[in-house]
Every structure is written in structure tokens, then in C-alpha cells.
Amino acid sequence: MKNNILSIVFLISSIVTFGQEEKPLGVFESDTTWLKEIIKFPISFAPEIKYEGYEDLRFAKKWRDQSHEDFWCYTFAWHIEGHEKQSVGILESSIKLYYDGLMDAVNKKKDFTVPETTVLFIKTDGNEKGIDYIGKIYVYDSFNTEDMITLNVRVKVNHCDDKKTSTVVFQLSPQNFNHKIWERFKNVKLKSGFCD
Image (cartoon, rainbow, N blue to C red):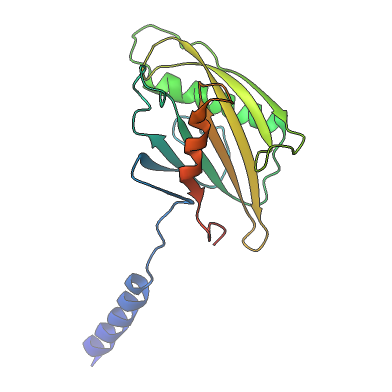
């Protein structure tokens, strides 16, 4: 009798536990020309960024090809628990920690100190639809060139009032803002239910 009761309790527990389908992480939808990666916070190479949530990254397939216009063309979103206020200072500090940590982690040169990242953001006046900040990141490229590069960046901050989350979207490329590459980011969109 005890074994039957234990079996029933175990069965019900298993159904409840395994029957709850975990929703896959990700706030973006994109076509097959973009590679996908998800990283949970805290980010191993930048643990000083104290957010809870995850990062959804999409890379243009040729993002590592220096001869292609897609070189270093990628976007990422920080989907963060809570209504995280963003400002020029917060963005500059967070992105500096992020890229200093990333490039140090990727660096393969022994006895080489990766140069520090310099970040500059300005708040837009609202004339550019969907963009809250623009900026430049002067960063050491440990992935490809092993030299300093300048990345242009656009940022949009989204708040989900019902779920009390924030999604900060970054779009990056070394190309000037008037280059056609920035149109490619239209192929990576926030899912319609990204606040869920």
C-alpha cells in the first residue's frame, strides 16, 4: 500500500514537473542569415554587470570576414529582470566592462595586456525612430584583427510594465550610420511577445 501511494505521488510529481514546458530563451526573431547565441546573466567574462536575465545575440554570418561589409555586424539584447533605468553613464560603464572582459577572455596572445575599451554614448533627441542612444566603442578586436577597431552602435531601451522587465537592444557595425548595412538590422526584430 505504501509503495502504491509513493508511486502515485512520484507519478503526479513527475507529470507536474516535466509537464511544464520551459519556454526557450530569446527575444529576437531573425532569418537564417543571422547566427544565434544566448548567454545567461551573470556573464562569465563580465560578472561585474549585475543584471538578472539573459543576452540574446545575432551575428551576421560574415561578421568575422574583414573583407565583407558584414564584418563585426551584430546585434544583441539584454533582457533584464526589473525596470533598469539606462543613462549615458550606465551604458558607457556596462559596455566598457562587457568588452574589456570579452576581449580579455578571447585574447590568445601570451603575456599581452588587452588595451582598455573606450565608450562614448549620447542620448538622441528622438528624431531617429526607435533609437534612444547612439555611440562609438573603441575596442581591441581579439577575435579577428588583433588591433583596435571602432564600432558604431545604436541602442533602444524597452520596458515591459506588466512583467517588470527591460530589454536593451544594441546594434553594432564599424560602418558609418549612413551605410546600407544598418538596413540589415531590420531582419532582426523583437518578437511580438518579447515582454512575456
